[in-house]
Length: 575
Ligand SMILES: Cc1cc2nc3c(=O)[nH]c(=O)nc-3n(C[C@H](O)[C@H](O)[C@H](O)COP(=O)(O)OP(=O)(O)OC[C@H]3O[C@@H](n4cnc5c(N)ncnc54)[C@H](O)[C@@H]3O)c2cc1C
Image (cartoon, helix red, strand yellow):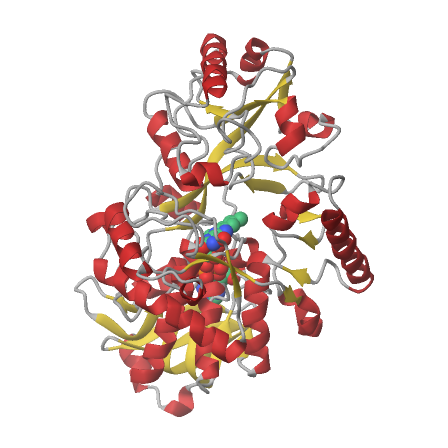
């Protein structure tokens, strides 16, 4: 039997199977934030996660949150950052998104951080140097806006530790030990200073003990630390969490979303949401159909985002009249990623975030063997440049080119620095190696004359320290991820020692920017602009407030958590 929205309204309270104040769909950073705020405020909270683990893409991520004008900056003496950040966003985004939402974010972000610090002791580390992604624009900063969650002890979760989604395997050492980028840099100095040696002893000692009792290390950092911290506090407050919950429809009447129908353990449960329903399903980076519909051609076939982010929540909302935001340039946020088959035959999608592209001695070329962009620029801008270049000459995949000396010193993609044997990567078709540049070009199907000429020109730039063509290493962002010990330009070094190496990279969405249209309270809107009472969206389910631009490190999680906080607060205040 089919029921209409009107039938739903006629349902008396006794026809509901369960009743909560706030119901959240999706247990990533955005949904967990909405849920914890509701629980802190003493509301009956139900968090429904479609998989058997919490964390979503947030658990796989670096966990950085971009929050301008945060209290860490203020404690360090920074003033006026709210105005500076708005100026920066105006320059970067212009009228591609509603300025009001940016203003709301700038105001709410610091409040959200302070609220969570006060109630659940969620604390962060501020990087002095972690530049915004368009450092030349007015209002950009060199550091301070991006915050990294402090490590979290997974042992405090007891048996619920297994409910926290594991990071991307390639981002862990020894098959299960998490470390931060800063720790990785220190470990690479292990033969050179005592401090690094002691760190290695401490981390590996803890990991060995962990492995006697747990499937992986329990010292959680990055996105895993963030979601585990929120999760632990949700458990402590006895919020209800349903795993493997499939919501088949939202129940609404007269622009009021008042409940939902959930498939659970083989039966259908009608859940009343008295104050609000918050959609936080992480957008649609993992939906082949929606990627086909909304992404540029050639359509990305892989994603490093969590495979459960397939846009179900967007479709549920649209069924009761919600509207998507307007289409953007590409509707996605991007990583260039290399693809490999793991030993267990699963597919590794390895995002080249900041570890290799900016280092001296690497260029990226298209099929003509020509560079097409500043390799050290942000991952999002780099992929957009791949698509632009592809309009004129095949540039997908693009090829990262370097020499063996570079791979030894800095690593490339999945290949860690100081890796002695490259054979396994060559045999799996991940790394291509040749004795000379011409031969490498032939092996990877790139114009050899073009590549030889490009490498020659680039080596000249490396000598002078000035990349006349694309300015690699000419701005603060590039230099932050170069090699500070390499002069005159930390991002430019020669590619001149045989053998030569190449790795292919493809555009892969780390998230989506097309989402549900919302207002300043995170309320979901109809196309007329009318809010649907009781229905909220945050994280990647919400239309990107930066018009698809990527202002700085942590811009996804920062905004997701800020609007998760606003959604719960509004539902509680007005529901
Ligand atoms: C390797 C990597 C590193 C990154 N690093 C950063 C970073 O440092 N900072 C940053 O800001 N961004 C980063 N990103 C991007 C960022 O992680 C995501 O954009 C962000 O985590 C999305 O958060 P979310 O809460 O919207 O969704 P998610 O964290 O993906 O959570 C969504 C959850 O909803 C569940 N779900 C989906 N549909 C339903 C449904 N119908 N019912 C119930 N549950 C559902 C999913 O299973 C999932 O658990 C990174 C991404 C990757 C891949």
